[in-house]
Image (cartoon, rainbow over all chains, first blue to last red; front, top):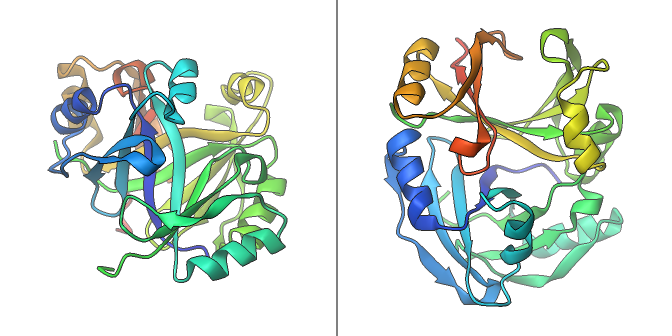
Length: 138
Length: 138
């Protein structure tokens, strides 16, 4: 497997609304996409475009959101995960498993509408890593 | 100011040598550049290329390295900072200061040989943010 594009950096935030102000007014982001809920993953999501990659702002959605624990440790928010693209999600899953890396669950539809899975940070140098099938636009 | 390219994601590691094995053999990175010391910043650095952005592996260099504190909290390593490009570093510094964001020190030469500064995470949604003048190659 070849290392694919860095699709996005996932950044947890207690408030997407407040983060949008930060990215727009202080960091100068010109393209901030409409936030939407991803109930299956317990997050509200908002993509901010840079010229070469995206920032994925993620806010907890619901009581069981996996982001609550992260924000308890990092109340102001912070870097949560990295996401790389692959051409074939099932091939990628088999690859990571063959390398002994812990894949968290079965591939499922992610925020870009293509299949994704996460790899446990313990096998990724402390970085929670999302692997996603490349969207067709690319 | 416009949000520039996401030049790199800085990832702290207790061992660049071990991280190179991870990025090469498990993540499939094809271009891993030669590690080098950046004594002024107290780090050893190694860039890993993805097709659209770089991963900057950073390991503590010397007793006073600012990375020791991060690794004490995150012994396996983890996401340390994000770096965005700007066309003019001095203009960018004035911009961030005018927005009330805390710029950490004066612009200095960074790992790509161009001027950089860091912005305090408290003003960047919990994300330690590096701003760098775009290298001439781009």
